[in-house]
Amino acid sequence: MLKQQSDSWQLVWPDASQPVFTDGITVVTAQQWQQQLQAVKRFIAMQPGDTVLLYQADPVLFSAWFVALCQLGKHIVLAPDGQPDTLDLASAHSDWQVPQAPVRAENSVFQPTLLLQSCSKVSFFTSGSTGQPKLITKHLSQLLLEVQTLQQQFGMALRGQTLFAATVSFQHIYGLLFRMLWPLCYGYTQHRTQLSYLEQWQALLQQYDVVLVASPAHLARFDDIATLAPYAVRCQRIFSSGGPLNDAVPQRYVAALQQAPTEVFGSTETGGIAFRQRNTADVGWQVFDGVSVSQGPEQALQVSSAYLDSAGWFTTSDQVALLTERSFRLIGRLDRIVKIEEKRLSLPELEQYCLNSVLVSQVAAVVLTTTKPQLALVIVLSSQGEQLLNQQGKLVLNQHIKQHLLQRFERVLLPRKFRYVASLPYNQQGKLPRSELEALFEHD
Image (tube, rainbow, N blue to C red; front, top):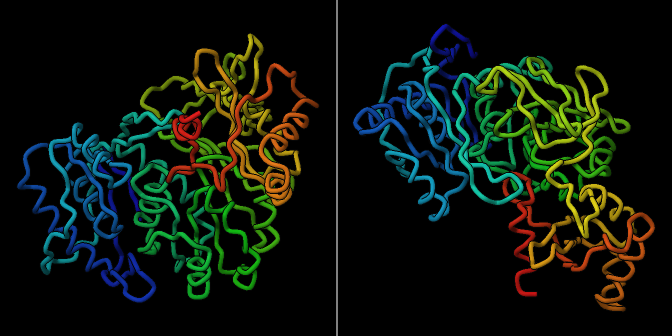
């Protein structure tokens, strides 16, 4: 249980035998987890410097290091992945790096209460839509306040033996909050292995009541969701964050599991802003408790909450229509409204209209920065689109899509380049970095 004090936070453990992690066979209890925690605390105490690079693929080791560093008031820098170049980039912002190998644990006395220092900080690398890494630093208190909100908003409906499983990494803010800190702080067991396939989720539902923390890309790829219908009662909740789900996806989950995924809207800078669950028709985004929203210039969403460093309004690049003081509808990204031949074009609007074609399954638009801006489309074809491509070739297919777009857009706004791919290049956070889309056109 998580408790807030004036200058620290308490993690309260009622029972040393409480399961903290499992791989479905072996269980790591609170007692065993604390033994690893005490070992890494001793290791940390011998290191010079207070800014520490943390990357660990194993959630048991990651959580022990994370909590130990927070107990000692350190500044944690989270590498987004374990690639050598990524770690080199992140190491430039830290004094030393947590070792990959486990630190030898020894028997230690179980502590029912652990104190975390409010002065601790956590830095995340975020690329957003540009692909260029940027460091965002949060105070530990901001993260734990958000964890409290998650428990208050969703936790009361969960059964005590619920298992948290995930398709996303805990090295980013969404996975850290939803997959790691929320269950750790409120006594839910975590599945130790990151999921990649529907069959892994199905196997867990046969044994446990499960909360799935997923990316939009994974949820869209799980085609055979109907096979989970016999286990619907064990599916506690499905979370999705990183981008909106295609309109057809929520209804597939409603049909199979009697619930749509709970989509979470926010960013590393703002923390969670709002959520929605489209069990029926499209609904507005509901603002989280403790968060206030307003509308700024050009209908930009403005946010105020305890998750931000300043007490004023933070202006996002999201254009919204306010429905009430506590709900809104997303219109699109202001930074995705571009000019082609001096005419304004909303890339989300173009993408949405393109999806109305029977030839298109998924699409992403990008403006290529050549001597003159050129609009390009990256498209995942439907079965009908694949058939047309195979029978009549790319040029004919391009013309069919252009003719479809001409029903809505002027000819000058039509795409000049097309790429047909098996899947869109989403990253681990379920985002489509512009750099990845641009790379598909490099050899033109």
